[in-house]
Image (cartoon, rainbow, N blue to C red; front, side, top):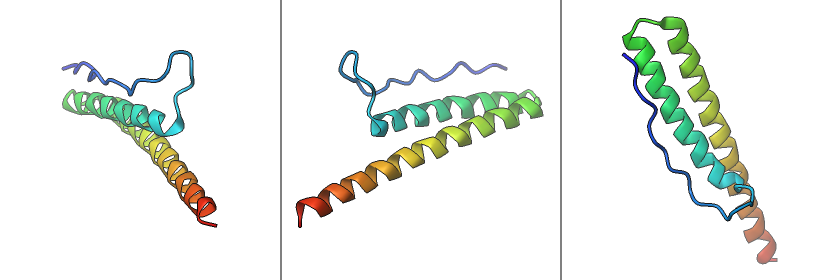
Length: 85
């Protein structure tokens, strides 16, 4: 059984501009969701090596999203600290 990837719509960005890290975190989360769907499909099919590969991919995507969110949170805290001094 093959599950099609989930259609995930990213946040809009200005044409030609790089996606800010905090917005790219949502892309990582969406990719992780897709990877989990593939892992589930491979688990159902008994394809254990492929299943664990997709799980590892999902974990990597979530770790990347977490790092971007932490960095964004730190930069917001730094901005608040610098504006209050």
